[in-house]
Amino acid sequence: MSEQAALAGKVALVAGATRGAGRAMAVELGRAGATVYATGRTTRDHVSEVGRTTETIEETGELITAAGGEGIAVPTDHLEPEQVKALVERIDRDHGRLDVLVNDIWGGEHLLEFGENTKVWQYDLGKGLRMLELGVKTHIITSHYALPLLIRRPGGLVIEVTDGTADYNGPNYRENLFYDLTKNAPIRMAFGLGKELQESGCTAVSITPGFLRSEQMLDVMGITEENWREGIKQLHAFCIAESPVYIGRAVAALAADPDVARWNGQSLSSGQLAQAYGFTDTDGTRPDAWRYMTDMELAGKDLDDTGYR
Image (tube, rainbow, N blue to C red):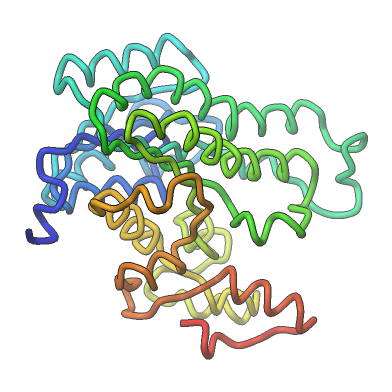
């Protein structure tokens, strides 16, 4: 079967697909032939709290279709149970099946605060709780409504997207308590869902990109995808950065793997899956950001990317 047809006839829901990793995952699933429902809060007529107008969920739908799949953009706030319920009912009416659920909802970068005054009693409580709502509560609501449709057929796949692997996050405190909880929760969710889905012949995993060159990150650093290596002058660790396409290819590879159950309940990364499935980033390399980050911290100094691509 060709790469283009690997997911022909399959139906996917990528929750949180307006930009970045979510958009790339949706597009690469479409490139493999899937019908992809892409959700998000920013549309051509409405801007979410993220505050970016340069990417919309409608554009993601068009990119999926242009890649060879069928892109269906559905504006959805995943904190609103009735909206999520209606979304799943629509997928059921349209197809009667759901083969892949990608829980990528986040959009909380504007809530992050770094520095000395980030202890739980010093952090803005409203921002911290909103972070947990966006990165944890949304995933739970979506799974609650979507999983009854997914488990109708054996072989269904749930992918919980986060920041960091279990191996990396375990010994490392992720900036502040709210962010640490938010980004560790999907890892535990995948473990728990793996247990709950096993009897239905379905699989759950968590997955993380490495140092992601998202649209927002590129804008913050004042660079583009074409000249991204200029960012290394500002932050040396940017040398290990990867494009969103890399994590997109990782998700497409998982979704097309008939033996995907071997990963059930595990915490995975784009770099790890590139080695397992043989895909590369857009530049032909295989960046392994989490191994790089771990080694750099152990060395206590900046490292170049030799041996990590």
